[in-house]
Each structure stands twice: as structure tokens, then as C-alpha cells.
Amino acid sequence: MRHLLKPLLVAAAFCATTAAAAAASHGSLLVVTKQSRSVAIVDGTTLKVTAHVPVGENPHEVIVGPDNKTAYVSNFLEGTGHTIAVVDLVHARALPHIPVAPLVGPHGMAVHDGILWFTADRSQALGELDLRTHKIVGVLGTGQMRTHMLWISRDGKKIVASNAGSGTMSVYDSIIISPTMAPGAPPPPASYTSPGWKPTLIPVGQAAEGFAVSPDEKEVWVGNNEGTISIIDLATEKVSATIDPGTKGANRLTFTPDGKLVFVTMRAGKNLAAIDAHTRQVVKLIPIEQRGASGVQMQPDGSRVFVACPRDHYVAVVDVKTLTMTDKIDAGPEPDGLAWWEPTRASGE
Image (tube, rainbow, N blue to C red; front, side):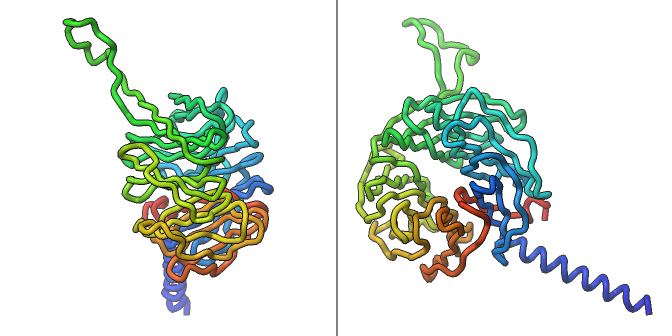
């Protein structure tokens, strides 16, 4: 009898493993929950929380690291924090925090080539954190109030940051800095040159905080508190248009992967706005909550968009094809920052 049971047990184990792998292939949603001071890992198929990992006081934003096994969470503390929390996603456990002092108020984050860039809201600066050494290796000053959200281009040569307190956007372009030489002097040796950044400051609207960059990296859409959206041409680094779709208190924005739609969350109102990126007209206002929304995350395949509704204490799930809310995720009290993680890549599958 035992010789018959063994193949059955092996087959059952294979089926369970296959089912788990199929579920994992859909990815997981990471949800920062402020009141529980944790990151919830949510199965992308069942929409159920598989783990809560403690991260520290007043966490705001979360990002998956370049190893695809680690997440980083900014412990903002309303602009007074000095640490970035680290989460082992594979084993769902907290790792030691990374200190970022003397920079204060880490918030928005972006990763490129082993470097975690982050905004230091109270310090009016961007920090450059080497993830191999956990050391600050560079600082870019903005000179602007409440430097808050951040993006870096795929080639790492352009950085965009929002300055919510000043109503401006900072754009940095990678350059090589050479010393000024006297006329007729020979060219300086290579050791006299160094990489640097050329800053450009672009005025936008009131309390401009959340923004999204189009998939082709040609436009930046910036949400302004008064209800307008400023569109920046990244080639000229100037505002090319300001539209008024009525997105009062625009908070966070995201594009669909094909660049056709832009979704905008709002601090005021009950809707998620879906805007046609070409015509720049509102396609639909999607009812999702009662008391304002914040973080937004597009699923990489473009099928769903997730919206944190902190005052209603759930994450709304919106079907991109039908533009309707299809579900709610109870990830914990006061959800805010969101990110997407593909576990199968982390496990080497």
C-alpha cells in the first residue's frame, strides 16, 4: 500500500507547489499602514494579507530594492525622521534600519544601479544612499520647501523631484564637471573632472506633491492642489500645458503601461479620476472611497490599479478595462504608500 501512497503524495506536493507558483506569478502588493507601523504583504491573486512586517514609527513610502528580495520604507515622522526601514520580503521579517542623519524627513524614493535616492523633506535635499554599504554617498540640495516625491530615468541621467511647499519641480541632468582653465592651457587631465548634476527649477501649482512620468519618459504630469495638472515636457524642461480636469487636491498619479490613461487620486472628494493622456479629458470619475485617497500603484501588466484610502482604512482595487472598483483590501489601518513585488523573480524561478 505504501508504494501506492508515495506517488500520490508526490503528486499532491507537486500540485500544491504548482498552485503556489501560479499564485506567486501574479505578484504581491506591498502596503504601508501608518497606524500599525508596518508593511503588509498582500497576495496579488487572493488579495489577502500573507504577512505584516513592523517597520517603525510613521512610515510613508515603500519601494522594492534592486535585488528584488528587499523593500525599503521611509520613516517620515511628519518630516522629522532619520531612518529608512529595511524588509526581507522573502522571509517577511524586519532588518536593521538604515540611518540617514544628518538628512531629515526621508520620504519619496527611487532606485538605480545599486543606489537608493530619497527625498529629505525637511532638509530640502535629495540623498544618495549606497545599498551595498548603507552609506550616504551624495546629497543634492533643492533649496525648496518640502522636497517630497522622486523619480529617476531608466538610464539614470535625469532625476525629477517635487517641492510641495514651494510649488515647484526640481529637474537634475547628469553632466561631467571640468575645471575652468586659463586660455591656452592644455586640457585638464581626467582626474580633474567629475560627474555632477545640472539643476533646473520649474514652477508649477500650489502644493504640487504627487507626479507621474509617462512610460516613454517624455512628459511629467504634476498634480496641483487647486485642481489643475501641470504637464512638463522633459526635453525642454518647461511646462507645456496646464489642464483643469477638476482633480482638486490631486495627491498621486500613475500611467497605464501603454501610456494611454492617467489615474489621479484626490485628497478631497470620493473619486479616482481616469484621464485620457492624449486628449487630456476625463474619461471617468470612479467612486472608490468617502474621505480622500493617497497612494496609487499600477499593476505592471496594466490590468488593475490599487488606491490607498487612508481615512476609510482600505485599499481600493480598480479594474482598468471596466474602470470600476472591483474589491477592497483590508491591509491595516491608514494605508498609504504602495509598491508591487514579483516574488518568483526573487526566488530565482
